[in-house]
Image (cartoon, rainbow, N blue to C red; front, top):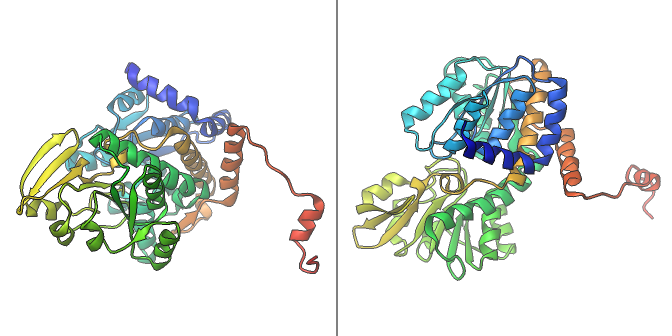
Length: 404
């Protein structure tokens, strides 16, 4: 029995009060009895509690990682000790990564729970007809909406990422804190006084920029969306193209869910000593091929930090091979944040099991009642009470006649 992994799981469960409340009800009702669930999520303690919650509700669960560097081996072993099959280790090769995903699909799951859409895409390539799936992250939803648009999506998918109780907190506060957990662990460098560039001002980029500002950095945002760019400027940040930002950046962190935010052109003008990191799901936001091609030497200078010396003698540093820094190096999002996100996932799986027969081949938003239930459970966990509308107030909000 892996005691270190068990301790991590126990710590996570102790602080995941929302999911624990839901888990009690699901276990009592055996709401997933006989259901086979295939999961591809970052295989660490918080994910472990979600997987155990589904298993305790009667499901047969198999779990792989959704990223080659995001597994906590202690936790993976502990889950196996508890009878939950995992196929994950930190530092997987590309071949191992896809082999593990195939092992998850080998037991013909009814429902998939994915992060990044690799498992769902592989199920499509294998011609599997599952009941439905739930997708965790922005990157995966972008891919799934493209599949729906092109008419190739073969089963309903719940967008856990679009739930208010997910992206408002997980993407913003979770990514904001965990990104710096990874950067601090990897570099031990000061943020205050530095020019800190954030590639993308979606919810993840907002969170990173907010935390960088709080740490004393001079924050620069790069964007392609004019509305987000205006928002970033009015939030107090400089906004400029990456080509201009790269010339002065001490740190560049990408978080756009798109490829090639940093390419050869940016590397050619980049400030000597710039540190590069990525908080997007895939390691293609910083073009590693361009970095390798333009460098004359490469060496490891700290755990998870590579130094690249360019042809003209400038040096840039890359954290964790450009993979998501908050999990490849850091511990991932805070426990209380993932409590809300995984509560959405658990309830989303229940919803799919109950309703898949009447759902079409499209991406669905999480029902508002699930969002509200998670919010109220979170308020209860924090000991916070709300006002309620009086009958007069309710009538006023439902009336169009009286304006005084």
